[in-house]
Amino acid sequence: MAVEKVITKETKNNAIDMLITLIVGELSEELNIEPDEAFSRFISSKTGELLYDEESKLWWNGPSYIADMYKDEIKEKI
Image (tube, rainbow, N blue to C red):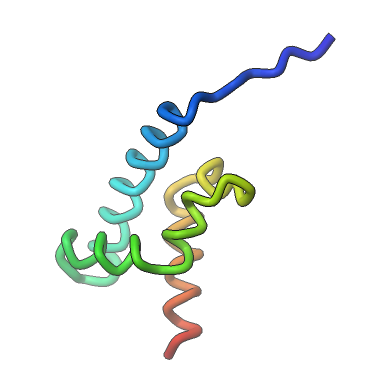
């Protein structure tokens, strides 16, 4: 018998908030921009939006994976 673990919306949002903190720190350092700027750019990106998409489960991935995904996104815009 498999036990299904239920993750509450609050727990998921807390996990996403912590991920964003780590992602912004990494992006700020790698892109040589202020954390506020990195946050603003990331949160308004397609990757940032996808992080909150219930179906994508992107938040299950680590911060470096998501930061790399964002960097790929901005490379495509250039």
